[in-house]
Structure formats: structure tokens, C-alpha cells
Amino acid sequence: MNCKTARVAALAAIVALAGCASVGNETLRTESESSVQSKVIEGKTTKSQVRGMFGSPLKTSFTDGGLEIWTYEFSKVSADAVSYIPIVNLFGATASGTKKELVVMFNKDSVVQRFSMSESDVKQKTGVFNQ
Image (cartoon, rainbow, N blue to C red):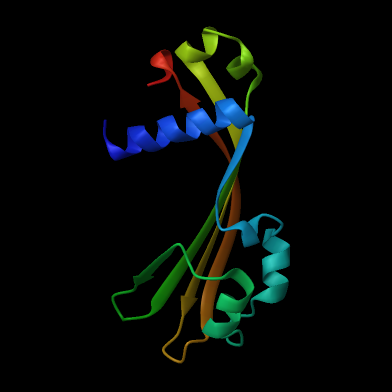
């Protein structure tokens, strides 16, 4: 069982038991594109202020020019109705929800140069016929 399959199986088990699950940075749960725009100001907000608002990033990367990029993610999914039908859910259960992602790039002075906040619909499929 590869890592991706194991994560899907674990998430499916959580969704099946709890009906809904959330994964990632909890500080993004109540954030929207407009709320983040009011908090993060390009050319003004510092790295320490971003860390104070959202905590440590899920992932840190660097541009070719050496600028630091922080990525935050939060996903919340709920089991769809078919997931509650015994035996049928083994063959094809689904969970739907939203994924939020905040990406922040800092300049060499540790000030926000650019950022992007997005929210998109996600659907997770599990079961024999959804592979």
C-alpha cells in the first residue's frame, strides 16, 4: 500500500466514522479571501506577523532568486449520503467539502511581497469502483 492510498484509506475511515473530517491549519477554518486581504498587506506585513496570525506553515519553499514562500492548507470534508448505505459504501463512497490554501511570498527583508488565498470545492472518492 503506497503512501497516497494509505492517506486516502485513513481519511475514508475517519469520514465513515465521524461523518466529517478536517485536515490542516485550523486558523484557516474561518478565513476567506476577503478576510485574509484585510489582514495581510503586501509591502507591509512581516514574516513574524504572518506567523502570529496563521502559525507555522505546512510547507516552506524558495524561488530561484532565494525568496521564501510559505504555504498553508485547510480541508474540511463531509461524507455524502451514499457513504451511509451499508455494503454499498464499500464499493463507492464519496466525501465532499472545501479546501483553502494560503500562499505567501516574502521579499529579502522578510516582508510580504505577494500572497494568494484560494478556496475550492473538493470531492474524495473511496471504494473498489472509485479507484
